[in-house]
Amino acid sequence: MKVYRPVVPAKVNLYLEIIGDRPDGFHELATIFQSIDLHDRVTVRSAPSGIIRVRCDHPDVPEDATNLAYRAAALMAERFPAAFSKYGGVDLEIEKRVPVAAGLAGGSANGVAALAGVDLLWELGLTRADLCDLAAELGSDLPFCVLGGTALATGRGELLDPLPDVQGVWTVLGKYRSIGVSTPWAYKTYRDRFGAEYARTAAELKARRQAAKSGEMVQAIARLSKGDRDALPVLAALMRNDFEKVVLPEYPAIATLRDTLAEAAPLGAMMSGSGPTVFALAPSHDEAEAIRDRAQSRLGDQDLDFWIAPFRCSGIGLDPA
Ligand code: C5P
Image (cartoon, rainbow, N blue to C red):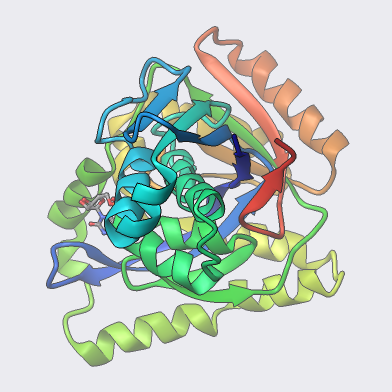
């Protein structure tokens, strides 16, 4: 029986600006996604039972039809019914390494792993563009998980402009095990408090999207990709995440973690996505370890986990099965 282990990395947001409402109830974003070398171990097998089954070793991850990996396999079965009946069901096993509900697209990456694994199992030969289209039907972060690397995203987060690869940068990630932030809550609270600042007209939306595309952070990424290390502190100083304005006041522990990591890291720290993970940037693995050790000794909390992961230049890969 064929077995595949698609590798789909987690992400951080180096920049996240909420720029307006959308007619579909979602928000218009301008965000810069960055893949990091942290991923779950997902195993995809054909299941003779003819059904889709998800198993996960993490108690907070549902194994039913609400799991994004399940939904991804169900979408493939719906789109490719002949292959589904030819090859039978799909067995998905997820060993969690990326923290859950953390603002790192861990669930989205599992959905993309299921799409990519089923594509291989059923020998469909889908292109990255095909996978991105299917991914966009499942959630706003999934197309980026297909593409990976560094990219500027607009729309709901699904319209991607790839940016040049950045190498030699590490993240130190910190997350309280007992804290989870609901993404819909974060968007709704942001709209309630800051909706008055949203772009109102198509021209205003376009101008704000364009400002992000030609902005200083994109220029800093271009310089860094060419090996200009002086651009790293410039990039770090330009980091922005609008969600911090609603999440940090509501969760003082996350605010303290952010302040502590920012003090411990000369390049500074910020929350990723709608949180609660906070990350600091570091120019080397040694420096990343020093930052983690400083933050850990200052906070020393049993409930707090740290990870170190370098930036990664690609999306979907494959582990030998
Ligand atoms: O697309 P995804 O499933 O990740 O979105 C989760 C929730 O986050 C949506 O139901 C919506 O409430 C909110 N969201 C939004 N605008 C976006 C992305 C997500 O309002 N661009």
